[in-house]
Length: 235
Image (tube, rainbow, N blue to C red; front, side):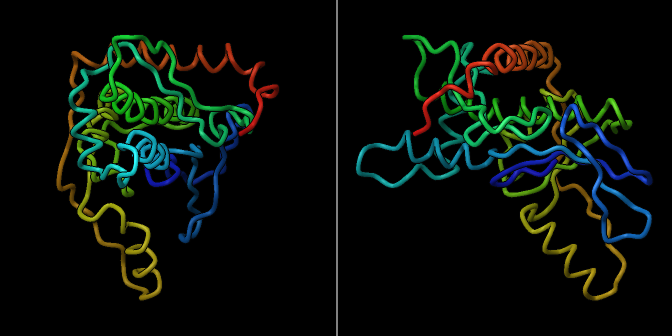
């Protein structure tokens, strides 16, 4: 799982795969006879950047990642029933829909800023879990998933992903540099080194059923609102 400005879930494979219904397919890798089967989320880490701007005090700088995570940690798993749909720039996989838009659903008078922050973390993770479901229909999924990209610096995001997917999440040193490091090894002609995980996050079995229900809810929200998206005014 890569989580940066956008995000994707991928699995290596020796054969071509195509899932038109879920907008997922293989791309060639730098290795002979090797492919990467993947699905993409258009807006992932940028959802957090957007929240940092919108929820900062008027006239102050956007909240930094540590402040965002601290705020989100003040809200319990499930964000007190609040659901964020992370489609700030449409949806790619598992539903190709340029008209899809983000929303906070089930927002009530009791919700606070910390709940909205946590809902953003959870909404991105839930959508990635949705992509993983579609990927698992074509390829076997391991019990451990590597988590890379700038978002992998967030222990909260890693734990939520573990709870959403029901899989062990592993992070590596300097996860935002994985692509750069791979390009450097390709250019040098040297063998790829193995990356030993520096941290692992096990699913909290108390939270797994909660997030399974929330993923089903996110899917229903999308399917219910899809007919409305094309007619929505654009800002």
